[in-house]
Length: 111
Image 1: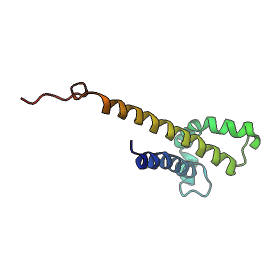
Image 2 (image 1 turned 30 degrees about the horizontal axis):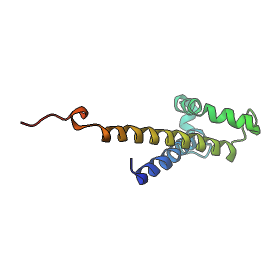
Image 3 (image 1 turned 90 degrees about the vertical axis):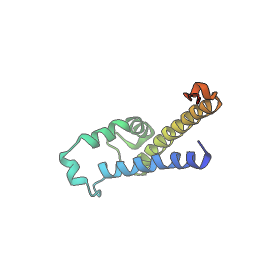
Image 4 (image 1 turned 135 degrees about the vertical axis):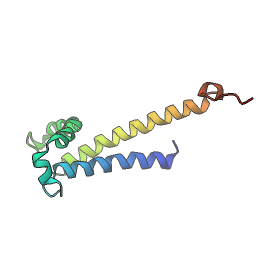
């Protein structure tokens, strides 16, 4: 993966996940009324961010959470680490595929 593409991926995933978090969890969200009665997506959001919430509790924001910047920063850090890990994994796979001879990549001979 080229560096600009990797940087775009690493930055884009946390922004998308924070936007999804705002849409599912914030009272100011335009979808707040909908998610009062349809809890599947907010529950999925909480499940995906459980490590971040546990770290926020351990750092002293309290069990009930303050809903402040600390939780959102830790969630952003979590998704930044996930996106960096996937970018590095894609880099390694693409590097191995580049080094592989064409015959092993699935290329067929043309007669």
